[in-house]
Image (cartoon, rainbow, N blue to C red; front, top):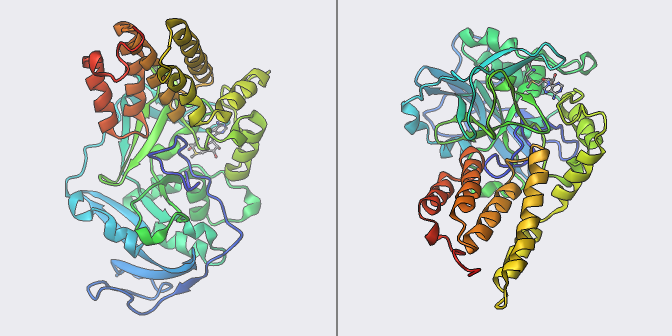
Length: 421
Ligand SMILES: C[S@@+](CC[C@H](N)C(=O)[O-])C[C@H]1O[C@@H](n2cnc3c(N)ncnc32)[C@H](O)[C@@H]1O
């Protein structure tokens, strides 16, 4: 779920639109000779149904301006085995040797069950979940470079091979994942399941890949069951270091609430209205969104708020505070209107359930900055605490959250402290 060339670490949408590119289609070629290190075993791509499957084998895909060398490789982390098809250079960057201590996975805060709606199965909380809680950790069952979406002819063979390498005991659960592809697409079940359930993940890429590089798609036996909402209450992030997907709460979640992530880039101005979001989800995932926002009988206020939010650039966000801060004749009254600006914006975002966005984070920091300027410790801590929750739960490095914690503990170290007095 998320191949929009977006990094999960920097943006908020998680599912990859598993788009099939029509231009620059690479050719997949069978390679029947070793391309790389002598210690790897290679076999002709087609001849792989024997019980003596080679540990790795390679195929080539021409695309992205250069020939890519993709390897089928099962990555083992403790008892977990992940069937992957990755570029050799990407595999080389993975800290595979450090994967020796598998994480203990447990998701006691949620259960997966029927939503009793057109959404099928979904994830539900079994207890109240505070904001920023780590809800779920999971290893993928398959990972594939999404360049393959560029392929037409042999893609079904590639997906079949990828699934054939999945440990037998996991196959029933994998094959029972949701398939939303229209029957008319006549996709093999493996490809249909991958297209319906893949989550876009970012893996470290070699510099030679350039900015135009595509990402990767991973299927998870449980996390792929999270449904989409245009006002998500959870966010997923893939950590290449541990090779796990983590899901965090974006706000307090009540017992029994369904957990939703976002499959699309809600930050894009083109995704501000219900009509465009529904069209995008229909096009990419073949469903009509029935989330709380899209189900509103009158969505015009929401559309207007989202347009306002999505059209505000980062420099627009900094501008009011910067202008006040850099003015030698700044006044307390001037600061009041700056605060009103940030309060209104955060309120808009909260109403739309867009509280996990980087822009929301910036608003929180700047609002905290206003309270720091007037030495209002209580409000400063409250707004910076919300920013810390965002930092903890999404795209920001934990160092950022640590820094905020330091300011919360000692507000006087915050740069704008007391500047209004
Ligand atoms: C990755 S699966 C999610 C798990 C799925 N509900 C299941 O039963 O396994 C994606 C599919 O769930 C359904 N779905 C997810 N979010 C939805 C939403 N907001 N509105 C309607 N259907 C949704 C669609 O059928 C979509 O193709």
